[in-house]
Amino acid sequence: MTRIKRPLFGGAIQAFLPDGAIDASSIRLVPNNQEVFMHAESDQSIIVEILERVDEVSDENSIKYHFDALAEANDAKSVQDHIVDRIEPIPINTLIVQRLTSAWYLFGRQQVSKYHEQAKNLVHIHVCLLRLGGDLATDILISFNDPVFINQQSSSNDQQNQNASRWTLQDFEQFFRSLEIIKLRK
Image 1 (cartoon, helix red, strand yellow):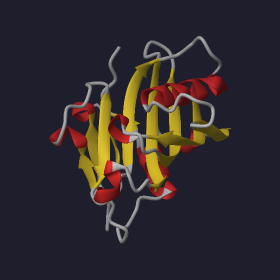
Image 2 (cartoon, one colour):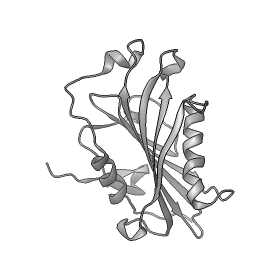
Image 3 (cartoon, helix red, strand yellow):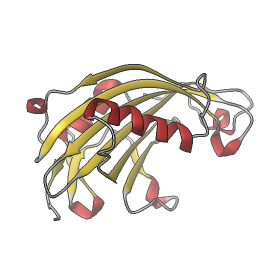
């Protein structure tokens, strides 16, 4: 199947979305600085956030800063509930985003409970951080949430299709590598 680039943020950005991506804003309220896409048959999701650039920490530490903020939002605050396995730079020349000053990849794991339930699910989290410089001073944070263990007591347990064709790391990489800004705002 040939993929086409889909508009994000009202057409300001575009990228290749994985097959079967459902725009979460058609189901629930999504903040203006986010685009959320859910897998049609699994609990996987891809979230794109446009954030004010974090300059208090170095480029390399900024992705960990954002991962920790995600852990806080996911109520995975303890050291055992969120672990960083790998952080590495992404060569800028492999991306097409304009005004990029640096790009980073993080792979980590979080123990996450959905809707503040007691039951926690193990989620592999892949994060790409695109840091825009100059007058844009923006961090574009792209996260791929990939549940690998769903607790039987979790509300997500009923929603899983064990035979679903799941998104892969390659789908995520194609998404962030294809991301391009169409309309720049100052």
